[in-house]
Image 1 (cartoon, rainbow, N blue to C red):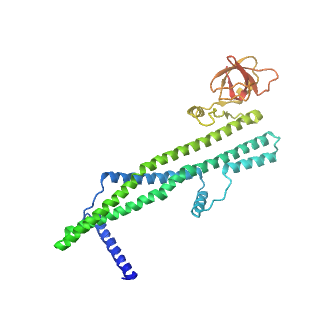
Image 2: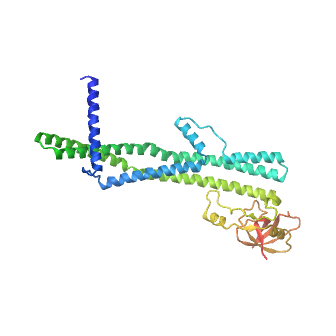
Image 3: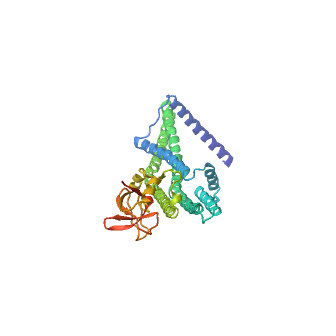
Length: 366
């Protein structure tokens, strides 16, 4: 037998198998043939794998949107990834805003209050842009890549074996149908032999599929570790941004007290209370939801206060040195002016503790 004859016979056999499966599948759909049901445990594993695949795809795609909101940039990154090439580095939005602010401040004059403030804000925005870039890189490596590896690797293998199991099941049921229709003893013996073979192949494929599907639990455990890495990356990012903005706010409050607060009798929002450099705790979130509004008239009263007065602290303040007094939001302290002290500061007193406090952090009580 030459190679051509072998290939022709193989094609004929494959065509016959395909036709047999198609007939069996159609008759099952029409309710004209019986169908071998998978055991409940295997069905549950298949359902769990399918559910894992669906939600992994949704989480992965939405995480990509979160990290890179620009759809054109995502498409470009996808193309470069498929070409196995590194995408060109581009400036991100915070970095671009920061550069605009720095350029504007330079042109207005670093010696002016507004120009200096723009430069400081621009430098902070660029630091936030760097933190944003680090978040994207860390999240892509520790979170998105494992999810993508599951979809494009493990699940594809599961889908392939599941398809084979479906075909083996159709072969088995087709063999059962032929055995039922067999009349002659010789035909019946041949059908019984075929049934034993197809049953054995089906059982073997069911076991292979089951072993693969039981690995989904390990996949969940791995994805849980990746999720924890993603949360830590976000926590680091938001803590960095919070600290950057807190530092900027203090710089503006100290360097530009008259221009830092809103003009034209508009109110200004007090800054978010301080939190740990590593974790933004629930207390910080609670304080954020109840920001206090300080009015210019109240600040004027504080500047002009004589003698000891009681004042409520609007939000946390960390002393920069030993001459200052750290403050906690909502506490009440005693304040008084000292001759020769900067007009934007008062002397604060809490029990035996005493030190300078910024008036912008206080609300004078009647």
